[in-house]
Length: 341
Image (tube, rainbow, N blue to C red; front, side, top):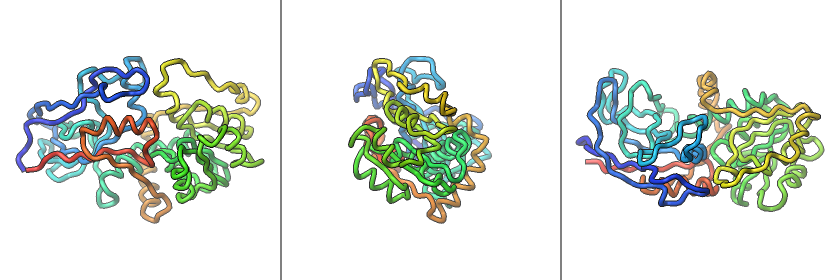
């Protein structure tokens, strides 16, 4: 195929106030720079949309730099090398990198990781075998210090991270795994994936549903993807010495007003709870251990993963907005199909 001179990319046209809208994004065709030494040209196959990206759309100081206005967004992507000026990569290699939201990307060879498509499809390296999987693995086992016999509650459990957390907990000997989700279909899927109990948080107060699902044994670990009412409920049901891995707070990402802290936070004192926030970037030392474990679990069927796939770069903004509304089951991905000669 002849190499493209331009790439299509999604730019941040304006900063969202509350829930993002289509007008916050712009599809632009931009010239591709010439490859320099050590660089590769990647034809992106899939890109990831993730909840953390919402925070980067605000012009505020955070753990990750905000997206710049009228510049291409970025995020996880996996693609095929179509040109290389690096001895480490040849045409046809499949790599993971961080220049998503575009159909072609010029990437520093050293800033990529190989996607072992002999082990799993390319898209899995943005999900179960990628940062999503490492987030679930390290958050549960290293941050929350899960131990066999623990009862585990996962919020946002039908999402990319949450569904893996529950399955990993079962594989590692949890006494009970409970998940919350946002629809009857998602609840049914969690039970298919081996969760012992699951509930739709729309069906009533989260605390009441969690207490019923946990029973008198309570819970020992809470993996928090949601925050808000879910965190408050978990604090009430956690046992003495319980641990909370604070991964996300999707219930609050589009808030325009400050959200109240859990009203029962003082329970953490008497119960001697540990609440620990974490970022996957701080867990990279566990990547090799995770990759070996997850490859085995996927191979023998212990862990399964779901993907919600939206076709076309032009539809990436809508996929992101749908993600924030909970429209996905498992990992939300955009399949990119640049024209080939």
